[in-house]
Image (cartoon, rainbow, N blue to C red; front, top):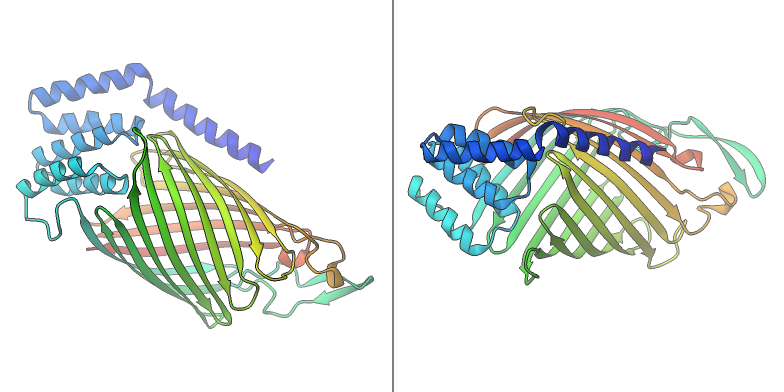
Amino acid sequence: MIIRLLACLTLLIASSAQAIECSPAKTDFWLQEARHANTNGNWSSAREALGKLSQCHPLRGDLRIESLRLALLDGDRQAALEHRQWLRENNIPPALARLVDTWLAASGPAPLVAAGSRQELGFLLTRGYDSNANDGSRHDSILVNFNGLPLDWNLDTASQARSSSYSALNLNWQYQGERNWHLGGSARHYDNLQETEFRLYALLGQPLPCPSGLRCRLDASVNGHRQEEQQRIQTQLGITVSSQKQRVSLYTRYNYERTSADSHSIGIQWLRSLAPGVVAYSGLEYDQPQEPRAGDDRYSIHVGTRARPWQNLPLELQLMYLREYEQSAYSPAFWGNKRRDRRLTRLNSQYTWRLNPYISLKASAGWRHTDSPIELYQQDGWSTELTLIGTL
């Protein structure tokens, strides 16, 4: 039922956006408006018309390049740099990158790095609250079938849901050129739990030869996570193929676990732009342990959508549903033949205020629900947070 609701919501938003803003008559009108304003040197009007066209065709790089050129002619260098950032993230061809950077260099200070590349240093300061910070069960006691004998098991506080406020710091560095590098780390401290979570990650993106009309990239990453006795390191290698409106990624991952069995995963992810501001995605993954573990092999499938219902309002909504299946009973001694088979539903929203070219403020709220045949893994939670974002 949730999957049907998600599909209906996505189609409703997409069809509404297309019917109201992106009819052929409208797009042709905006194109003619942009050409007319450009001919008369009315850069602001040309930018406005081209911006509406870009909303209808969010993945067209030619519209972004023209928007960048018009922004420079209109004296808005910051907007031009934002368009340049989008072009980098979408793998602009090197020849066009050099041309665009020539325009930028002629309009302002010389770049600090080689033409066609960019460096960015970012930081995030967050203060938030989570109603279930330890991902504990929503039950105080659960029913256990201990070797055929039914028992009522009272959970200790470590297994029950516990709320906590938290503070977090995230630092990241990006280099985007012929190769893309992304390095970062974060620390999050939960006040009530008196626990601190640490994360480190590194990602390399390398362009690959690709058929005409497509963009191909090799992605390699490593990330580590530590919180109390839990420690995990993941290494991943994948290939991403992108077209104008969709992207497909194939990957393989190895998981090193300190407190459980190491495992190897393979998966596929698919993403498609349905309408201006509306993206749908889905994925499949198979995870196999390298030694015996509870539940043995795992299979998972997820679907979701991200949407900006109003293009002029910096509000984003996200809905995701994940279904996980395990090969065998999780713990026969305690729950008989029950499998853990979890089902996760997550809803998030965020609103961002841009205070100046370097500082933004983001407010977020989220809700999540996990269901399982085993009561111990039935969980609920909601969270809110306020984040200060800085870029240099």
